[in-house]
Image 1 (spheres, rainbow, N blue to C red):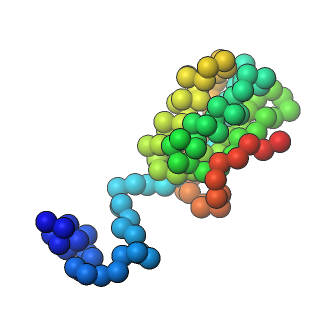
Image 2: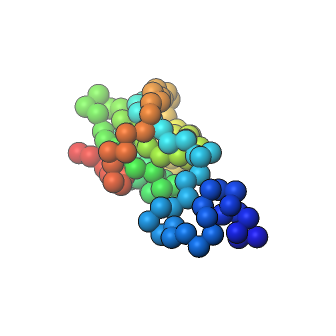
Length: 118
């Protein structure tokens, strides 16, 4: 059965796949730039956004803006990025998001991890 799976994915049996991992073509990587408005500063929004992004394996960053909003960039699998956006908008423990502005683009792969910017 293993040979069949390898054959279907185009990897010949016995091939060294250590340096060439299988790529799941169904996963589309995207980047989302999101501005969150509402009660989003002083309520651990950035720390919780980082925990969420780390748990989902996303990269990018989050930062406070001078006008009281929070800006975040999430990059990774499309479904996981959408999950992070929805979690930050509706499930943050102390925040109350009144509005979110989301701009989706192609992933740039410029980030190594997810960070809190100051």
